[in-house]
Structures are given as C-alpha cells and as structure tokens.
Image 1 (cartoon, one colour):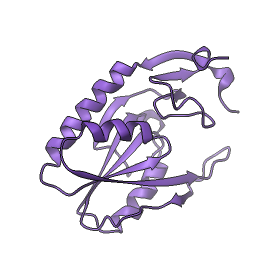
Image 2 (tube, helix red, strand yellow):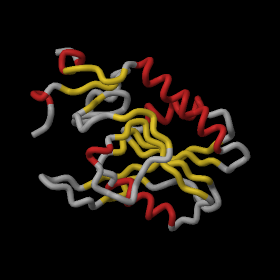
Image 3 (tube, rainbow, N blue to C red):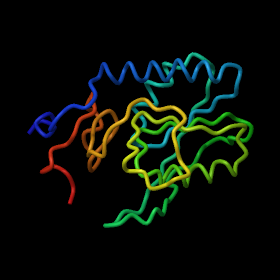
Amino acid sequence: MQMLDRIEKIFYTAEDLDAAVKRLGAQISKDYEGKNLMLVSVLKGSIVFMADLMRAITVPCKIDFMSVSSYKSETSTGVVRILKDLDESIAGCDVLIVEDILDTGRTLSYLKKLLLNRNPASFRICTLIDKPEARVADDVTADYVGLNVPNEFIVGYGLDCDQLYRNLPFIGVLKQEYRPG
C-alpha cells in the first residue's frame, strides 16, 4: 500500500510549506541582522523544516541539534529525557529553537527552562506548525509561526506516525485506521 492511500486529506501543499518557510526565513533574517544566531533543531521531526529554513535565512548562523523523548502513556506525564544534547555552548548566542510542531508545549517548556539556564543572549521559538487547541503548557508560545492547524492527527514534512510519513512533501491528515491506539 502506498503512503498516499493512507492520507485522508491534505492540509498544506508543498507550495504552501515553501511559501511559509520563505516568509519565516525573511523575517528571521531581518530580526537577527548583526546578531549571533544559533538555530537549534529538535530532532527528528524538525529536520526537514530546519534544512529548508536555514537555506531561507540570509544572515550568518550556526546550527546545532537536540533529541528529546517524552515519556508517553495513556496520559502524558510531561517528563522529558535528553537523548542528544547540544554539541556547542549557547552562552552569549541568540538561540532560536526550530520545531516542527508546537502542540501541548510540554517538551518546549522543558527545553526553554533548560536552555535559558545556559545563558543565551536571547531565546526564541520558531515552529512550522502551531496547534494552539492542543496546548497545555501555558509558558510556551512561538515567536515565529509558519502555519496553524486545528487539533488533527497530521503527518508529512517531518511529522510522523510511528516514524513513518516524514518524507511526504506536504502535511496531511492520516486516516483514522492508520493512527495508533
């Protein structure tokens, strides 16, 4: 069975995503002119977005990666574990977290507290997709938002279901029968 057969509907086309990334890249380039920009990608979901976004940014920037895991159960505890930490110090850097989706906000709330303790010059969040209806952490908002979605189960452009569908060039809703649980 092909991946496309498992998609109920397309929310954002490849062209929609490209336009959003270019818009974000232009705004970030303007805002970080003359600054010490460090893009921090939260793996694995943000890798596609990060690759496109950093090419759309026209000011010098460094990049680094983190990988985190949230303990998941029927009801998420919000406990986050660092699987891969940053390779470089962010002290004195203007840190921009690059995230694929901001939904509950629990993971970003944890990362925000962790990274602010490392003395960055500034700290902001950029997300490709914002899902405000799903938010439970009230201390996290994105400074840069590409697109908004309602509280739907979406995949594609880095977003996955059981590590699949990340390679779709669009963002779509996964059919109910292919969702976990």
